[in-house]
Image 1: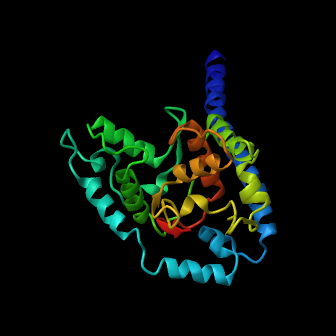
Image 2 (image 1 turned 180 degrees about the horizontal axis):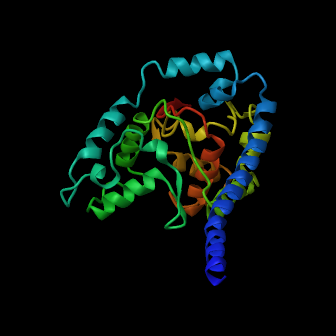
Image 3 (image 1 turned 90 degrees about the horizontal axis):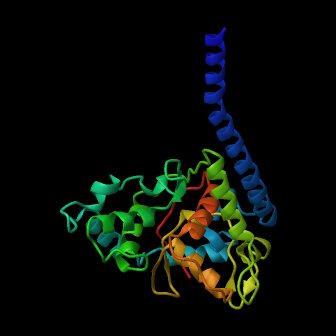
Length: 279
């Protein structure tokens, strides 16, 4: 009797994590579906797969601009530089590749929820952490080196699909914190990400058309013509917060990492195209 009871309790205990994982995944997927459906309804003429082109998916004129900008990619030099930096020995004689593995497909593995550390991991943060551990002080959050490495790693995942999971309740909490960040109004202008890129997507802000919320994580880092250089996803997020006239969050900190996690889950199934060119 006692042996049977012990066996039953053990089976139930092992089943709990599986149930929690299923519940977390289902909850995230329901929220993501609601988010996607809002955008699909707002832009009924845009194919879901075309949202990877951002604002350039909205009409033929925008798409022709996109094709023209990408005919002679200005980021090719950065990809080549990033490739060298990836395998170059650092201060301790080891390379970033020794730390994180082969470049092919690595970008497609991020972001993900680390169930051991109980936090979201984003690629650029892990690259910087490896570089620091190996004695390199040049690869920093805003350095040209991290942007070049990011461009190279993105190019090595082109054609692969965004595939983010929410494995447990703690991951769901990070997902929902990212969602909260998306809808949270900030700054003197009292604007949220959703105000510009969900509720008013497709409308103009001064001379620019605001891009839809879906597909953003699939094409970074981006060569922004306005900046005349590469911009990582977290830098773009920081730029948006600054535009509301608010103090922004640290690059690759918890706030932006959870927001990236939320948005990347929304982008599940989309083809990765980074790096790309944007205005």
